[in-house]
Image (cartoon, rainbow, N blue to C red; front, side, top):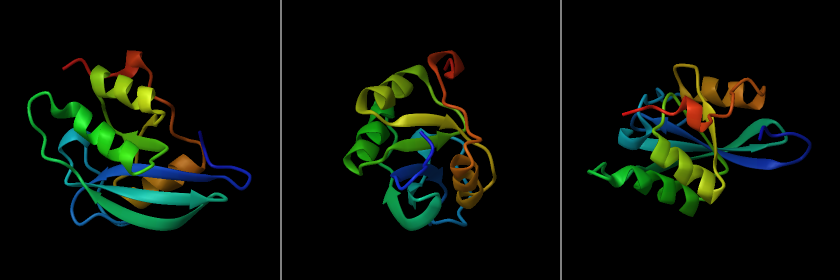
Length: 127
């Protein structure tokens, strides 16, 4: 769901430390240093928060899902995602979008423009 007409959306971008709009995007959401959560209001970035990721352990791919749900995230922008966490995000109501751009700011701009497709199970990583 792209932000339009007076709505507020909280978007999580897997990031390298220290996070923020200029942080490089991380290629693996489960092992990223942190998530930069950007609040988008009326089509513009209005606030930025950094949420530290939990350590990635065996079977721990659901930990980031629950962490972002606790932080009232509406959408996440990823380079790739496995089927299990994708289903988890779907269950908690967090839309998963295929990302692009080297940094958080460019990924958020692409999201606002509606240029990031939603990832379905057919697009999930098979590892």
